[in-house]
Length: 413
Image (cartoon, rainbow, N blue to C red; front, side, top):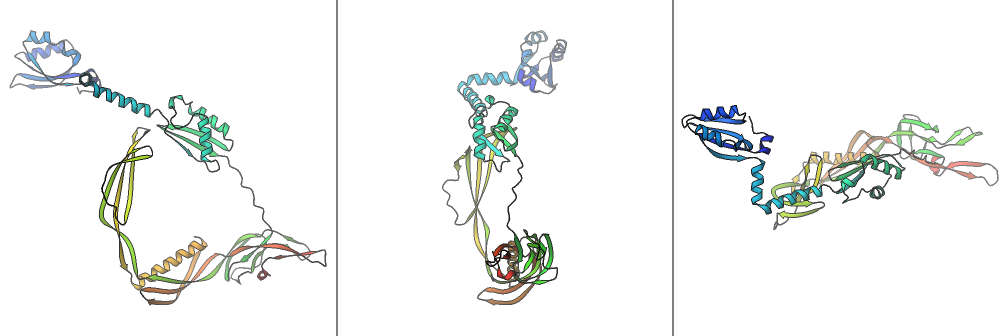
């Protein structure tokens, strides 16, 4: 039989029994239903070793006298012996008990409150309402109402929330909010045209509202009306808000300059480490004093907190590693510098016109190398959105009761 948890709680001892009638001693234990385990025989010395519970140990004296055997205690295990040792070290035992009690007390408080899921509702407002319901730092967890009741109370004070959930994990309270869906108010727009932002060749046009004035493969100039906000004929005409999508091929010229000598950061292999003891939001450095900072360094931080199951304890430690870096010069070839410049120009195109832009062609018009730099002039053929808004304004004729409608840009006529 193995010494399991029950045996450790009851306490047991390891014995060595010797004598001429050791077998008779074992048989007597069996007859009396005494539980023994881990029995090992030493026949050359006429001895046996066995484990027996502490409560049965004090019943052996009569049977040892009856069989003429003697015993020796080899080891003691279990809680009774641990408690006896603690009794001899009263101050240490008191400190251990106080530590456990302090740890339990600290885990009984609310240390942090997290608010998640809110966008329109301010976190400060939610925290104030939660504090009114008793959810505040340093509050006793056992004094808080049930989480369902807390969720109901929070919803009563947050009319803009469709659902509020409160969960308590260890010393942390999490308030999860699902806000009500409010339709966005429609923007009031004035009548307008959609005009071209640059000279281009139309590749795609979709008029959601308004009258299309161009078609695919048609060349337009900057300021030309693409989708008109005036619909109807000359007699019956009405101004609307022109909506739609117009894409076209546009040529963009870039002047690129790339140095042949580039600098990059590399690690030297030198590293410094510092350890901190963390309590809440404060850190106490315990090692790494007297180290001189590197001229250039990259700092990496690894923080860990003590956890027990789902409970988090606001104690932990932090390791900070500072690695030395240095600048290293790299000489690029002309072809590599050219490719780097083209990559930067492509990135600029996508940054200006969005990831939906498509580069159809690129032509290098001029390349020159001077003073350790590569100078290029590149022409990109890019397909992207080319429309912009042009408001329609009313111009009254002083000599007539009628009035005309025009765009604010003369080039749109």
